[in-house]
Image (cartoon, rainbow, N blue to C red):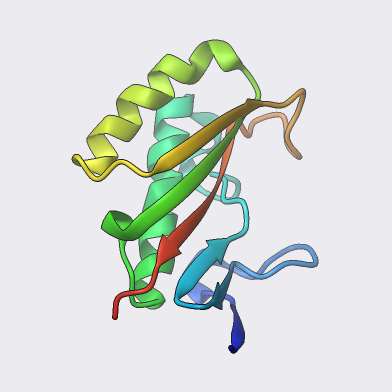
Length: 126
């Protein structure tokens, strides 16, 4: 089985030792995505979540997949009291195709303006 490591120019160059996504065994594993470097960085957690899913949609489409092929998402939030807002936003985004999910409160993310980081696993279209 081949392992393919991919960066997506639309998401910018990675600023650390990681790739945007790795494909293995017909599954796509993403690195954590944030609103860092976008107009949403100074907005609330709902805007940041929407921005992250725009990035995720681009990444998945580049990998012959889509948001409807999400298997699992992991949410890292710096303020767990904002989780209900994130959930409302996710219901809109998922449009009934709800993946498995975990939510973890973290004491901080790499920039104090970053309110949420999301990583995902998705299936590749056959």
